[in-house]
Length: 123
Image (cartoon, rainbow, N blue to C red; front, side, top):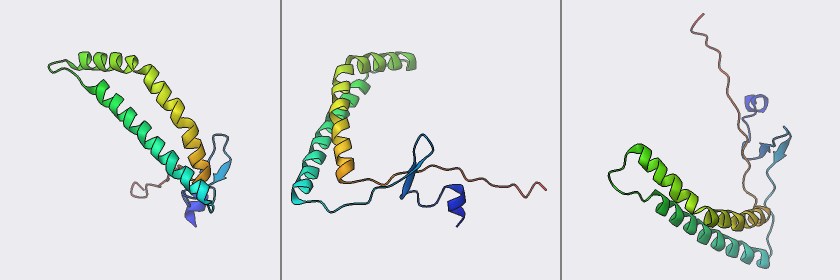
């Protein structure tokens, strides 16, 4: 109804690409036993990578007591930069796994929109 005109309907069914083309969410497909096992393996690998990233975040945000806000930001930036290689390796390992998992088990796509209202009280 109204959502079709404003782009708010069926957010889980389609998403807008950067070029403006609407891309529907891929239909879930029946997975073979081998594919189902691969999904389990991919999710386990992604969980390990997530825990590694969480540990890096925890280490970067571990700050000494008594620092000013500026010193805390500086300390965090230095710690974050020191972890750059580990973070890059984590991201590079995650990207192909995310892509493969997305092909096997498609996730709902999202389409953003803005509702427009008319202020009738001011008239």
